[in-house]
Image (cartoon, rainbow, N blue to C red):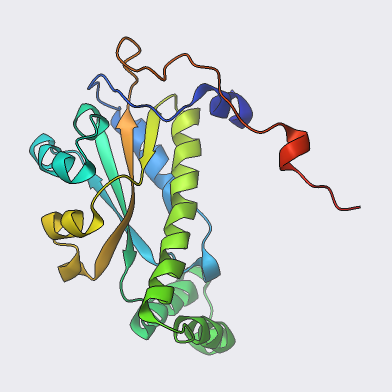
Length: 211
């Protein structure tokens, strides 16, 4: 199945049937999220994988009682680092040197460029928004991967981020929730969105070819 076929198949599932996603499929979806691009490759976010039913029951009220929170198999919480700081960059540079088999001195220019960006935002909120944008890149990769695995996925911005952060203790981890993704399988009998034709702007409207 091609990626375009998979994306034609997927939709933002509103009702799920509680069936568990096999572990091997979950791992491939998570690996796609891990391999997603980000600015400098820094990946300034964490992804919480919530399978526990009781915890998802507790999350549901702060997500405006959306049923896929509890009907899903797993709930992914994409949370940006808050704040992103030089210590993160130092750790990333050490990892890069180790993985690529180079000396730290060879990465000094790269390190300086990242720190210049991290320290160059006008406000803490601007820095958070930058980190949050990187998390959305990971979300996109995970959505596409789920579709190729024939696993339904629902991206969700409809939740009380302050309430969720408190519930999950994210502030203590220097994290702020950005977006959710429920993983599971569609309940076609109860999902009004199931079977509806996908609607997207035609190519002529969406793409502007500059020649």
